[in-house]
Image 1 (cartoon, rainbow, N blue to C red):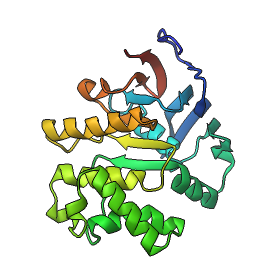
Image 2 (image 1 turned 90 degrees about the horizontal axis):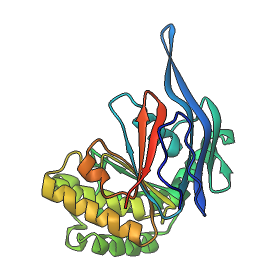
Image 3 (image 1 turned 120 degrees about the horizontal axis):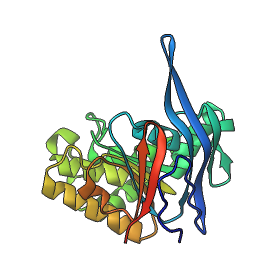
Image 4 (image 1 turned 180 degrees about the vertical axis):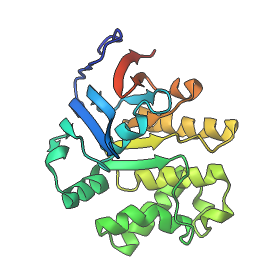
Amino acid sequence: MSPASDQQSDVSVVNHVALVELDGVHKTYRMGEADVHALVDVSVTFGAGEFWAVMGQSGSGKSTLLNLLGCLDRPTSGAYRLKDHHVGEMDDDALSRLRLSELGFIFQSFNLIPQLTVRENIELPLFYLGWDAARSAARAMELAQRVGLEDRLSHRPTELSGGQQQRVAVARALANDPAIILADEPTGNLDTETGRQIMVMLRELNEQGRTILMVTHETEIAANANRHLYLRDGRVDRIEEVG
């Protein structure tokens, strides 16, 4: 394993199995007459099976980085490789397929569809992957059992607590058996105890081999990760290995 890095503007961590590699990534937005440099020369490698917390003050580039990692946006320059895919060179259709096949998302606001049941929300990625109804239903039941909601499959999100809704979001993120789970402030809308329970679930998933990249501003939540990436003004400020 790589040692913790000293502070520097361009930090790279090399792991034995590189899952995601960012090499000199810049992201610039045009705002009126001004260029906003959201990410500046970011180089970092995320290894398979690791649990990362991405931290930094508001405006440091955390959300921009997560959008790039989630194939929701492209770098202005630099390279992003996910497994053997050169993400910056892919068209929109290819990016959509990559998101469906390799990524799972957990959001602070849950992002469940209120008109759908728990089962239907979990099945949503599988619908876009073209799974048949019987196979999708079996997968939804398996995942609902895994997160302790097998007796809530016919309920809608408005009939669930915040913690239950986030459990549905975790199950949905796992539906397509993704290589990476991207979690954006996954406990931000939860009380302390419910947030703790969600983090226990994420730690268990990581212990089972899942790669997790989590944005958080809470040091207590970040303590669950074994690597911390700190951003400042769009740059990598430092990387720390924990434990």
